[in-house]
Amino acid sequence: MARYIFFRILGLIGTLLVLSLVIFLLMHAIPGGPFDLSGGDKGISLPDAVRQEILKSAGLDKSLFEQYVNYVWRAFHLDFGFSFYKPSETVKEIIARTWKISAQLGIITFFFSTTTGIILGVIAGLHQNTIVDYFATTIAVIGTVFPNFVVAVILVVIFSVILKWLPSGGWNEPKNWIMPVVAYSLLPMSQIARYTRTSIIEVLGEDYIRTAVAKGTNRRSLIRDHLLRNALIPIITILGPIFADVLTGSFFIETIFRIPGLGRYFTSSITARDYPMVLGTTLLVATIMSLVNLLTDILYATVDPRIRFS
Image (cartoon, rainbow, N blue to C red):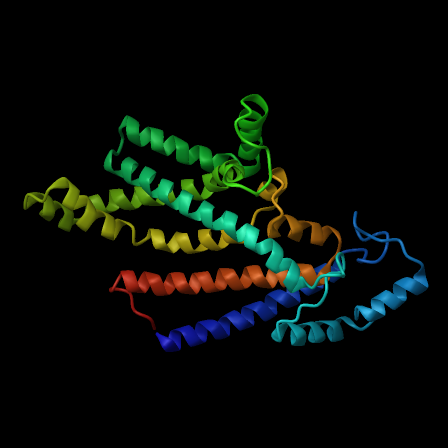
């Protein structure tokens, strides 16, 4: 296992280098820059002499090759520089301030969607082709079809505008969390419910389940000891990517509910051509995705002893 983890980490480093190069070239290929009028809505109109001095101080007067090499060297030492849009803060400070909010939203969303999705999937699988199955499946389909920003707007209209039960935005107290978590959870919950239902149905057809039933195993023991333990193993495969996805924030959810998280800030950084912020955030997201996938593989092999590392 140690050898497997070592080579996966080497692969992660190579992936981050390639990704950083691609994002770096794409950002510089976009017309306009962070310190001129064509730099999007956040562009700044400056006299040419002042702009050249700022470009020099930011290292943007050098060739693209020199800029990239310098960036990789600093990033290797966890120095991602200062934000162009907020020069009073470093990229690490901004990420530390905003990501903890996105991570909080993501962790709550993950546990809510996982619990709800597994329960719906198990119920649907155990009652295949019944009204219970159709109801659970309909909820899963709705969660897949409707984008989370549409669900978010509907929730705001119903519970904030019409009923006035919940605040329309913010992240200061638990009642602010309800609508963002529900809207953000709908898609992952639907994915987990569908996978769980399919897995439950497949396991129900296995010989060892029929043998356990023939031996007179009671229903509760059958579900707990034989059905769930084997049916939930494939679910681990999708939980890793789902966790990594919700952990890094959502621009739509954070914007609609006015949550000062990383997802909302990342999008505004692209508009402002804030190169250090975009690159730093991209590397953070890629690292989280890769590490979570590695952890998922290790957990998958731990849960299912038939799987071995090679």
